[in-house]
Length: 308
Ligand SMILES: NC(=O)c1ccc[n+]([C@@H]2O[C@H](COP(=O)([O-])OP(=O)(O)OC[C@H]3O[C@@H](n4cnc5c(N)ncnc54)[C@H](OP(=O)(O)O)[C@@H]3O)[C@@H](O)[C@H]2O)c1
Image (tube, rainbow, N blue to C red; front, side, top):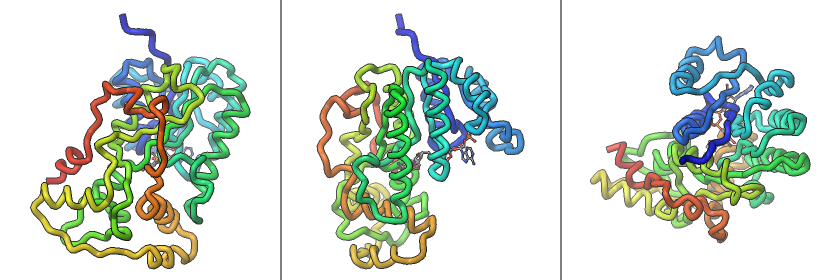
């Protein structure tokens, strides 16, 4: 007999990774509830997304982080909350933390994280460092409120990073030339988004994951940018012109006025020059691959084959 699955509320279910959280919750047979903000009615794309989940059995609960009453009513119906709030709204989760504390019935909370571990990124460069600061602030509020939680570090989403062999603001492989960060040998962890959802949702009823940071680091997907470029060249038969960007040039270009581009690039620095997704050891008890060996994650190679 299958164990009873917790009821999961997904916040931010129409977002880039929130959609995969909702889908994973449904696929893993959790009774799935979606917080649907009133303004969804004005956005045909989001209406279609929530209707697609409703057709699969999700329950739609109207509410918003700005409306404590609706939030409490939603929280009372579930056991677990998974938040996939947007980066520029991370601190709005402090209201969610307060409501979870007030509701008193939530057995697990996963705040919006799913990147590098913010507690290992105190030294992060400006201007992208504020994302880590906000995630840390939410972590500390969750801990102070005594809310059982799991923080999920998912490293580099394949769609954002692997699809273009890590070319900035591009989401398909380059055709002629590829920019390589330094010598391209820093090890990076590439994770396909659907797998982020599957691993994250696997933690919610797992007592081994309570009050821990769980790292998604699929062994076959710990590859340098150079290895990924070589993999693509071999499968596509295309030889790309390599343009190496020396570290000092990259850092100099970051000095300009703060902009969303520079925010993202400052995170690229830590990933591709410093190898900070993988330059520390993780023990088996916090490794998603070790805890959930049955998850047949997608390899970087299979992901790239989709572009052939
Ligand atoms: N590791 C990686 O490579 C990587 C890449 C991208 C993102 N991330 C992380 O994943 C998390 C989610 O990012 P994302 O890109 O998936 O987010 P997103 O698609 O930009 O937005 C997620 C959700 O945030 C809610 N939201 C946005 N603006 C709002 C507003 N003004 N008021 C209330 N709610 C608002 C929306 O919820 P509704 O659905 O309710 O409308 C939206 O669907 C972040 O923590 C981010 O750092 C990691």
